[in-house]
Image 1 (tube, rainbow, N blue to C red):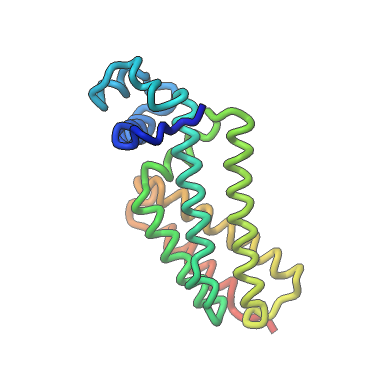
Image 2: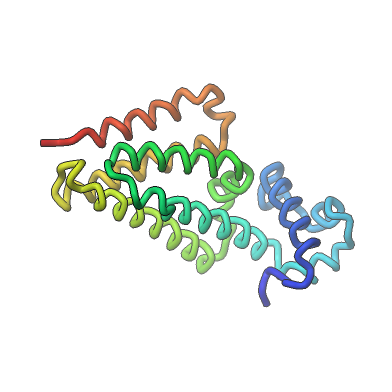
Length: 198
């Protein structure tokens, strides 16, 4: 059974919104289905007309967030950047904007993935792997600008991915870096990595 019942999308949207907030406030284990039903204004039994289970709902939220983040990396504008520095700047702007507008979902993806089933977690990690590969594709398009061998580009891609991943984590939990100092440093480090190496 799908976690989404198509003909009841309005109620499902309310459930998703409330679940996202409650998961962030109380964690997966702390969010009870009675509390979720009360937040939406429906009976507990009625929740299961819209969702398969609490775990399926968590997976749905994290999966959608991760897929949209992957699409940020596949943006047409990024594919048309002439230089690695230009691509990097645009990518960081897009990622920061997306994560900032989806803060609760970003938190869930960071903090609650351990509550997914092994199959669900593998699916999420697969999406993240594609995101990492897409970063490498973007760098390959700017290979001449960066001036690195294929091995060097792979290493650079790995380094940039780590920096971006740290940045996403901080954007998801702004309280850990309230002034954005560490986030700015991460971005500056990424820019320095892209200086042409001759």
